[in-house]
Image 1 (tube, rainbow, N blue to C red):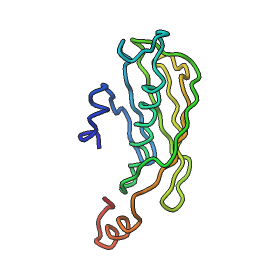
Image 2 (image 1 turned 90 degrees about the vertical axis):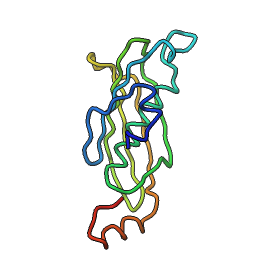
Image 3 (image 1 turned 60 degrees about the horizontal axis):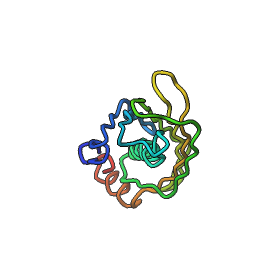
Length: 138
């Protein structure tokens, strides 16, 4: 997925961990990512959290996209800070799922934002066809 993720690549995001239902991404904040108050623009914080969410919900083999997302900004971050977003699957039901993402400043560990995303897998038939063919889902 990262190979085709031009946004993550262009922003210098790095996938530092991946497991079923989990993903960890890091990104350094550049001066271009801060707003007029000198703090990280919320859009970049959302984008990092949303990317970790996307990687986590796509670890099960089916093409999965966001159906909903919400973010709470907890503390400011500034240019030069390195942020780490850890996404964890809370539940999957049918073609849907719920994922929580915590964005922290590293190495300090200060929580910068909390994000919750709802996912939806593309089409159940993709899973069924792959299983029928004896292979993993696409």
